[in-house]
Length: 254
Image 1 (tube, rainbow, N blue to C red):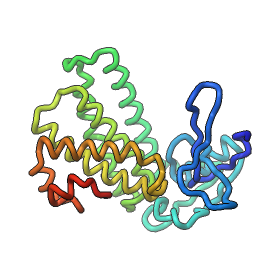
Image 2 (cartoon, rainbow, N blue to C red):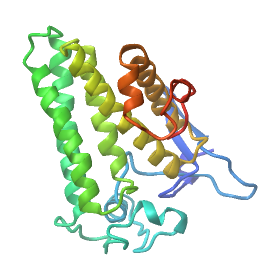
Image 3 (cartoon, rainbow, N blue to C red):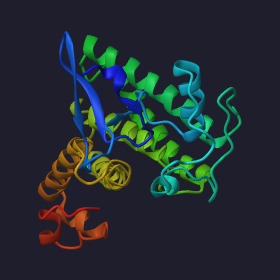
Image 4 (cartoon, rainbow, N blue to C red):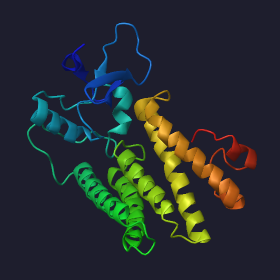
């Protein structure tokens, strides 16, 4: 089967990946009904509808149109209760979605540069660790400001924002540069973000998608570490389904 025969969908039921050099595989990410076509995304990252429409036209010369084809996903795309206008030929660089995507990409670039620096020098004295701590704060502010700009707590652009914040937090933990109080505070921030990320990913991909595997594992590890190091602080956060030791230990869905 040629991969060129598989059509694009903004909400695909399969994903293409390359387990070994020389060939690719396509695997479904959710249950597929009889007669339902297999689809993948031609884009490598999560984008707003306007950006997807523009990039797909520029790269593949087809137009997905100005409306959301699958209404079940409309709530993940709306900005202030409506779908922003779009064009296959031009991007509105003043639109909130474009500004958020640009800022996320910029912070992602800073993070990657910091990771390269750490590979070269893992010493706690490396000043990049302090830069990462500041970047974690910036990433968290990005999540909060994006939510305000989008006026939608479930917009799909919050997924890459949350993922970036969690990745930065995880990298900071590797450096062993935080005291006990700072580490517990970071774990609490990560826990809130991990629960939100998992909830949004479930809405976008479905509960059976393997896209959720990493997020579930990270959430379980954070809960376990907080139960070990600061159980009272964990309970005091008052998160849904986690107001007791039993609730935390059972790792409920967010």
